[in-house]
Length: 317
Image 1 (cartoon, rainbow, N blue to C red):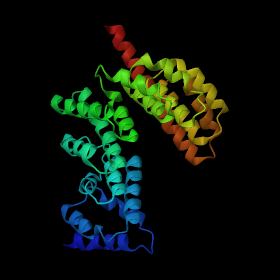
Image 2: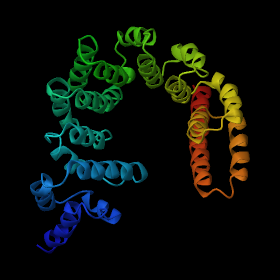
Image 3: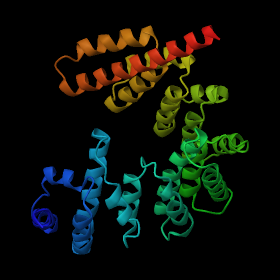
Image 4: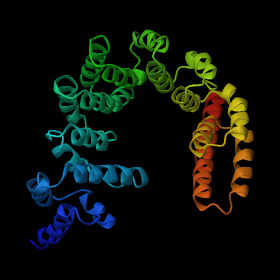
């Protein structure tokens, strides 16, 4: 009873549009107790949609910084919310959830929801289960249902965004028809399709796409260029290393620089390590940049150790 009374204070703050919602209250929505969730859902319709969305966006941001936080119970409860933007945000909160019991719900949303943005978000959510199926972490029957549903979407008259997200989700798939779908998307005149194709290429772990990825590192379209950068990292293309290092020296935009650096950490190599150490020394007065570069160096160590392990295993064989 005491916890419910305390949680009522949180609800009162949520309902108070005249004041900012206290940031420290956000953590109370992680692993929310059934009684608290019931109270929240009872009051939810009284919360303005703007406030609802702000809350869910803040929760998503928290999960990016702290993977121990879990807002799955709240997100599941909001999948049928009357507002499509809320449903999208609820799906986004579940994008990292590995519970295969969600698959039937996501498939239903993919085919039945009235809003294309919600259907697109469901397609993205199903991508994780493609990956889990490929590493045999979920039932093969479940994997087939997800693949078949996403392939049906791509080959339908669905909204373009939904079809693009379905293609991106299938990037992890080993189905033989997927490479041809990626190739077709890459050849589309619409730049967004090329972005999705490059995204799927990065997920594929297939070096056959190296030429296409490398050729777009200097693309004039920023979205295409950024996705190509990410794909070089996902595919660990060693041939991209000198190109990215050169681009890093010339790039002034902070976010783009960070994309280049993160891709380089996934490719690995002594040259990358030396360059990041130089940048770290130069950034000693910038706390935020220093933190990012330290994380990048940690990721680089993981990449290089993993690469050395694979090499030694091959040598032993």
